[in-house]
Length: 405
Image (cartoon, rainbow, N blue to C red; front, top):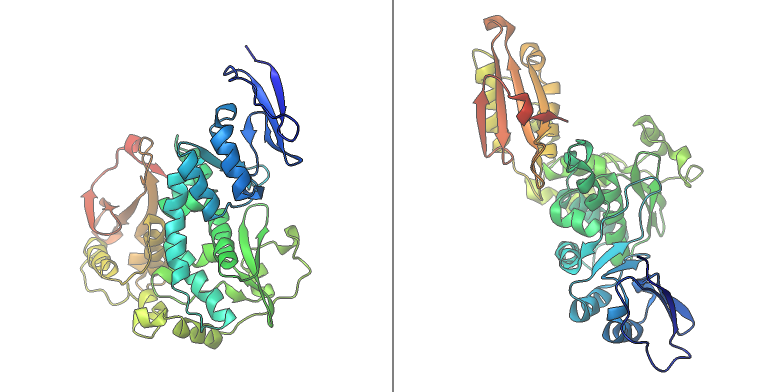
């Protein structure tokens, strides 16, 4: 049974009412602001430290253990929560219209993600130019966040992953990212670094326009470059031209920036930025595009089964930085096979991602289906586990155990 509705005006009342029943609903007003509505502490990011401390010290028994934040609360605010209400969870009001609501996260989950953001921000050299700082944060965001295929899998955990992915702290901590995660986390890093940016939202995709003091607006899409910058390749969606951005399938007319003019960067300017922020030094001063694209050429083997074994060893030895996921390795393998001159190899191999219905954490696996028409209709499935640390060769798949994404 629903309890009674109670209104407490702390500007007028000197004494708090007695402890209420679990069914009672309370609104609380302080300093002219309604800060508790329907027993929920609203918008903690708008409260002063003193107001928050007073509420959590004196009114904790009157509110639910889930508070809301209109934007992203400061670290100091979360520390007060951790000190005075460690079991409380925070729901960020940054849901995209029509999307699943963001799942409330614990204070520990917030600080787990914040620790990664803080480490990234510590790597900024104060002597870098404004554009170098933007590129450094772009690279790091793409390296430390991977696309979460499970959010697209429609398994029992798919919706859970999407809800977590829409919160930048859990997305960064768990490496469960979707385009909304990539855009929001890059925007947050820019904000923390004192750089101007804004998230642009199409119907089915989010990305970021950075607002450079002298160069003006610059288009970026960290989601599309996430795999490339983990493997030493040149980013293609930082400083991309408006014309190329639209040709790549983006729909700027769905955003508030359709009439913007955008500054684009040439390949040499991108190279200079990556040299300045230390990215290319990680890969001996050169991008790896040509090497990776040609990795499946000139493989010595009598058939596709032998060649894929050799290719997997080559891919296993590729240098990576950040946190490459199953999705990243699948995209690299697919890119390599799409560019091989060996038609029999290209046509005889299919690469999939699969998930298991009953694993909640990281169920994604790469499965490489190998045929070779020259030696009959035999099919082998290479099931890759833990990136490329190990794989199992199977001659048939139990469909109940694997769901293709």
